[in-house]
Length: 238
Image 1: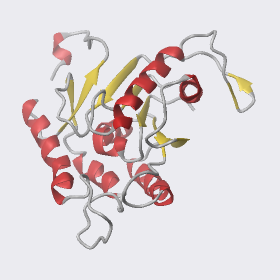
Image 2 (image 1 turned 120 degrees about the horizontal axis):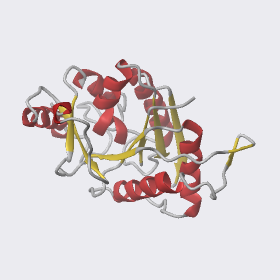
Image 3 (image 1 turned 45 degrees about the vertical axis):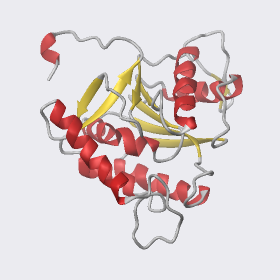
Image 4 (image 1 turned 90 degrees about the vertical axis):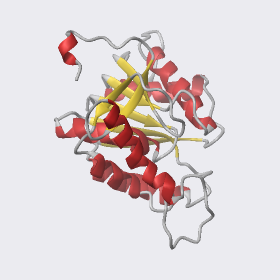
């Protein structure tokens, strides 16, 4: 299956928190979307790798993505090296996405910046035909996505562009709340974390509202780019 968009996160829930409104909107437009998680989030303070697996599957169903894979890299300790790059290249060549979303280039969690560079490098290397990969017993052809964009996470980075997700905030929040062990629950006896507060859960909405305000819509999601955004006409801008 060829995908239009592959959204990659260092941990299950990275994608939902950051760009799931955009994904939901494109899915409604008929685009084929997949999610790739690099780790199982096994070092997370709350929940377990097993609960995260179940929550990720639930979130994927809520969003309606076509596929979701987990590469089971080591949470907190994966590296941007040949072995990890090749595993991502295999996925890129299998699904041949036109667009790749990946982690913020700079963020609070060390895996986010690492994941951003790892995926970006893999996207470039995937286009080199002399790098040979085999998947399911067959040699793969080279493939390089047309666009690599980085979503915004914990830090309020300045976006290079904002996607109007008006009408999709509810679906975004539903996908986030699939991670029941991770986020605010007044009855939870798990340890408190920076993302388990009610303020953090509220921040998903007020960030979307603020980005929407800045582009004169109700809600938005921001992205940063690796190269200039090109438009065919000035009227392509909203």
